[in-house]
Image 1 (cartoon, one colour):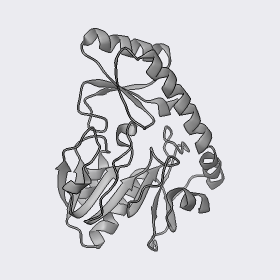
Image 2 (cartoon, helix red, strand yellow):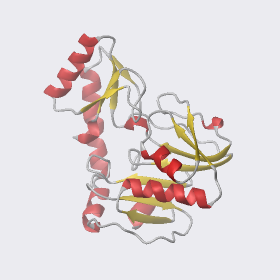
Image 3 (cartoon, helix red, strand yellow):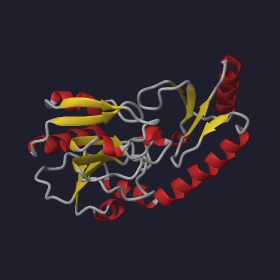
Image 4 (cartoon, one colour):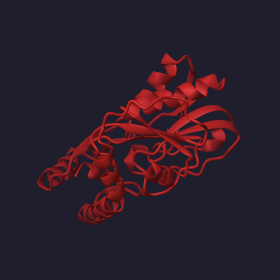
Length: 240
């Protein structure tokens, strides 16, 4: 699909049945290239990064990160899979190209910027930027010798892709309002979609949750591996 090639900056795109299928295929390609070590972040990523890595026989190594933001100089050789928008709240640091093979999950950052990883994967789940509700994709410059198992409606997918700028503007507007409303709390600054708010005690936590419930905002309580490893509330703006 040309629109996805333009969004990703990659020569080839394969639509998949799920975002997780794209992750598995990307790791499989890395394995076939002879990489034995797989680096994953300690937070802000996704569960199947390490699950699939172990299944494929990688030595999985967890990196210490700053709320999911990676110091890419830590990895000089091997395969690194990472979320380009950790916890959907922060934009990843600039990569450093050593002898490293990069796989980036751009589910949250697609339409925001073009990630420079070797392989890009993305989910089109219900609450994602491309919120088709089903399917995903893998994008890379190399020829893809795998048949697509995507069963979604490509016309609907194209419509969702065209709606990305409007969707991102809506989330940005809502984000500004929520940050203003919760300004007396410690709101973690980030260029992502979601807002993460730290709390000092049970009272602050309950007030933040009350605000979110009153404004019909979904939340996830941290510490959580796919968010951050600190006491905080992640406000899932992309779910609106």
